[in-house]
Image 1 (cartoon, rainbow, N blue to C red):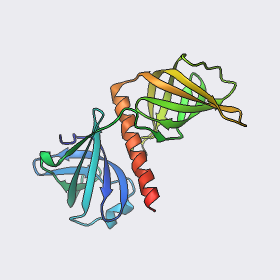
Image 2 (tube, rainbow, N blue to C red; image 1 turned 45 degrees about the horizontal axis):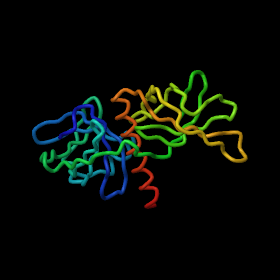
Image 3 (cartoon, one colour; image 1 turned 120 degrees about the horizontal axis):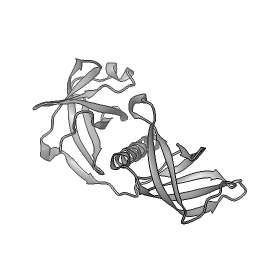
Image 4 (cartoon, one colour; image 1 turned 60 degrees about the horizontal axis):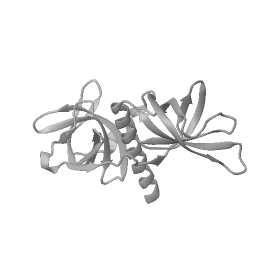
Length: 209
């Protein structure tokens, strides 16, 4: 399965051990055009035949393939031209719904802004003040503000969930509340999976350094 136009992707530069977010601009018979990462300093560092690994998520499935830069193109935005792999060279990796990463993101419940502790496509752990009146088994609705691609504005992810667990934090006036998602737009769920995948990659890069 090839990535589609406007598909969000992750670019892993093999020689530089660096990872950037980007988007697919065009797919032709022999090449794929992708947006140059928002960190424009990367433009001057990248050479023709630079080896890349491209990953993307579609319908809760992660795909990845290896390729190389074959040139550049200036359109409405600067683009890299990369070689198009054979379809059987694209590796399919099933993602687990409970794939979870640490994440401190704003989460709004009614008029109260809280903070997430970790996040997955199946649920969220949030931190809140002890005084907030919540109970296990209770239905709860809210909105998670997910960072957008390439410094775009955050995306609002609406959900309806069930409170599965409440843990009071010792010696603090806070508690952690585990919520299982019950209702969420499929496209929003895919955005969360993409975010979790990107966060894991960032954490691995930090661990290497």
